[in-house]
Figure 1 (cartoon, one colour):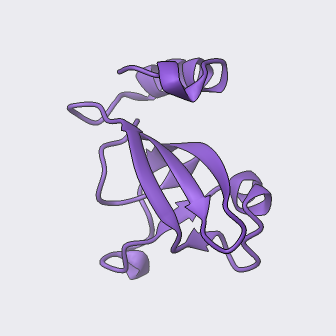
Figure 2 (tube, rainbow, N blue to C red):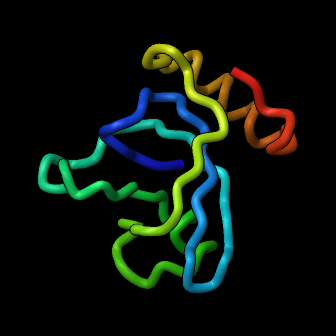
Length: 96
């Protein structure tokens, strides 16, 4: 999961670390802190950052590919349904 200011909450994306070519699917669940605004970085969860082998604080500058993007920010209930859906569905079959 991740935080990002420039995409609607509930956006599903694939993040790739260009240094090792590892990828993970994330869902934008929150907004980044004000000091990150304008930098164009995604604030990854500890689990996602660890899997991608980011040694820093979870702020990544790798490749971000949008898989599915809602037309509006999702509610908390819609996001919890989406997270359950994303974690149990192959990437190629994700549709919003």
